[in-house]
Image 1: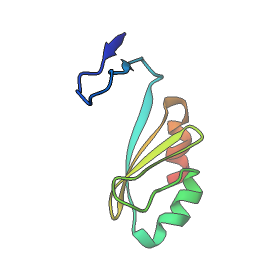
Image 2: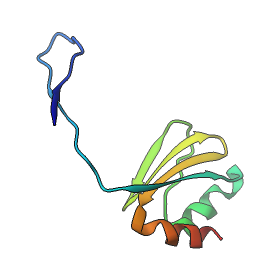
Image 3: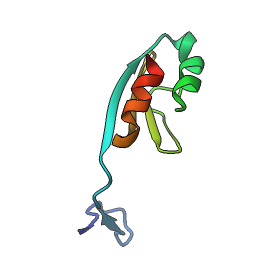
Image 4: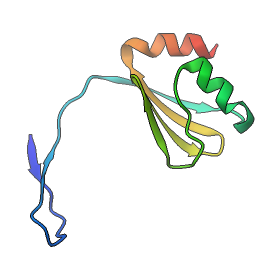
Length: 87
């Protein structure tokens, strides 16, 4: 499906492309800020420090939602491994 951007910026709008992606597993992680680096290393996913910042590392995407909270997206096939790594 192709849609056209509607924002009037004074320039010709570029096409907006929407496409289906592979299914992802979503996790909400809460961890003390002092443990962020250690947990990131164990999970194999970068955990950004700044609220609102995101990171992509291999097939793992993360977003910092708060000082001690992150949203993690991984391929469904990797979900079990991520859960095992966090145990």
